[in-house]
Length: 379
Ligand code: SF4
Image 1 (cartoon, rainbow, N blue to C red):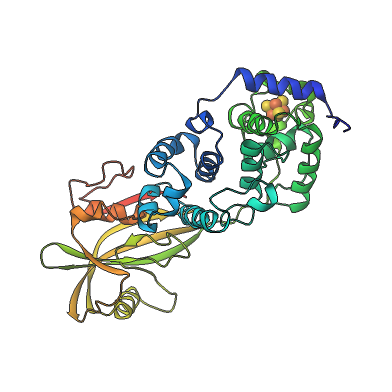
Image 2: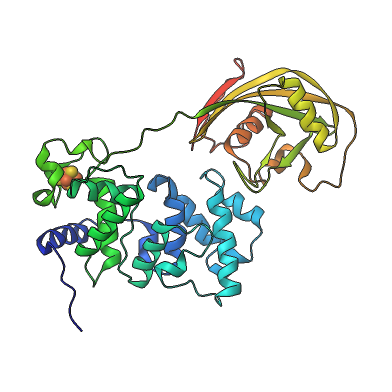
């Protein structure tokens, strides 16, 4: 068979040498088993590597195999993911594990194309698993890789454009070594994470500086180009705290789809422009089977997501009548039990406010009892 010709072998060798001599000590790199690669790649999306490390270790202790994950309850999966954000990733991983067990005889699909049929596995994740675990030549184009490639070849197109990604994929295939495609992908990603940084690339220590077109322009930090970002929408949100005897608080499980999907919360509603806060909370509780009276605002916090900012006004609500015990998305929960439920950051913070001293010492948001106001931001 004819051997594939690799373009720019000097550049390829320089980057691979750098990668081999600067290994990142990441727990998931100790094992190239497809399940490890898959979990680590999903966890690392939109998340700092240092934040992923403890979650990955805990995950592998609790769900060491794909079977263990497939057989776990969604509640357990979300609880373990708590704090990592973007909870749809955990739900998809769980669904996909079940699918692999049922439809693929427990074997994770080997090819880039087949991998993309699994829930939550897009272009990037499929390419990463296919190249790292199965040795397929497929460029994994995450934000770091796109930045490195667009600077290396000085590509003046916005990274969000499908044409630009197709162009980069095609060019990356011309330099990707056939023997170690996974190592090449990791080398490019590592260079983006440690040297070719977004604002200030460290070109003086870059192993491929001699080949970099953007470096030649004198302003490599200008690339890559991005579409203008839209400002996150500010949404007023009301939260109702309904307490009954013996320190029991009403909690609701959010719908599986959408923001903080499947997590537990104190009943929360976004206030529609044509409604008052009181009307919104009353309607929410009526829908849950309760007739309530709304108290004054007792706490306020701001929670930021990638596309949305919640301005949250927290009120006690008082029961007038009713409880539809048939709703299995509702539960009366006492403070010690909160720790067992998977909750998003804003509601964990409200739980901490309700029960000083905080039950959640790992919560990275501070609150001030006197001001009754707190702020947190996460994506
Ligand atoms: Fe990035 Fe600079 Fe290296 Fe070019 S020379 S790839 S801009 S770090």
